[in-house]
Image (cartoon, rainbow, N blue to C red):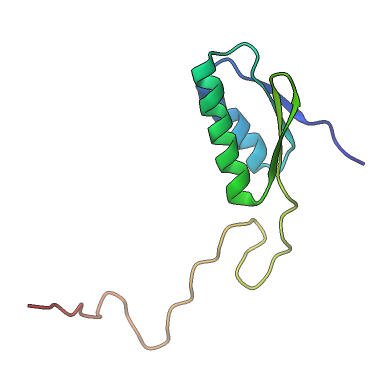
Length: 107
């Protein structure tokens, strides 16, 4: 069963944080851009395009001034993820101490 998209009525570019937070929470986001300057409309569309490009999501125009951002389902946790979509820290190499390893210099 599909859930209703999160509607964000953008009044200024600062609303990109609300859009980004909802998108990061894996919600479908509808940006309503009909009460905003043309400059901020372009900035918000550019921001949204970057979000969906970085995640492999989609953006589509669903109305005169309404754009839908869809985030793909997160991949299942694998050996390089901890389940929260953040990469795990690399494991230290056995027998090395990063603080004690000298950095070679070239002259």
